[in-house]
Length: 275
Figure 1 (cartoon, rainbow, N blue to C red):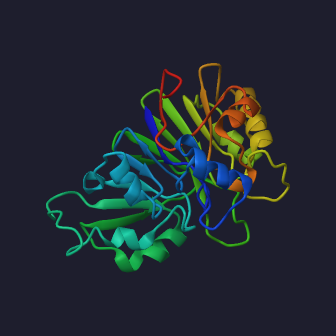
Figure 2 (figure 1 turned 180 degrees about the horizontal axis):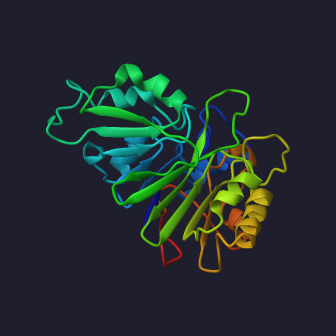
């Protein structure tokens, strides 16, 4: 399985749009791995996770072709993950994709459908509502949505995903807080090849509910190892960073031993340490 990180920032990006904090000033100066666009990923070049407004720029930067895209998983409806109006460009006259080709299907929770339903067109742009813990078959993948611990008072029904292909399994857990006992019970019996964890809070030790940081990532790794869902061969990645809790990339690597620290354009493949 090949996981490509197209964007690795939280809502404001890094450097943040209107910010001059120490980290944002550093990112503007150094560039490279320190510059992060809004969150999104691509599996094996065919299965997209999340679609922020930055997705168009990422398509151009990484020489992708979204006209061939048929399936998009949405974690939740916050704008840095779900640019609804962009999907409307799949329809004529914005796109000249022949109707003989398969539609683009977007998958997510019920609130995502309510936001996009005005853009939908049968055979062109469709939406499938997912139910937590009920797996769906998408191409060669079995995708199981989990209820995320995020924006708990806003009724957006956020999700994170377990994505399996053959003997390989990816846990993509972003915009969620620490795993609950219910989560862990549904992960037992699985063996994750790649685990990608939310690290929005970074070095900050915050007690609000909705995101994780370094301390939580290390704890979640221990819990996954304890239930047998991960082992010494599992690749752990920290991803989805806010400038508020971020330090330079090399410092983040030191603070997260045993983890890869994601950056825009990073590729992680099963059986190696990423590049």
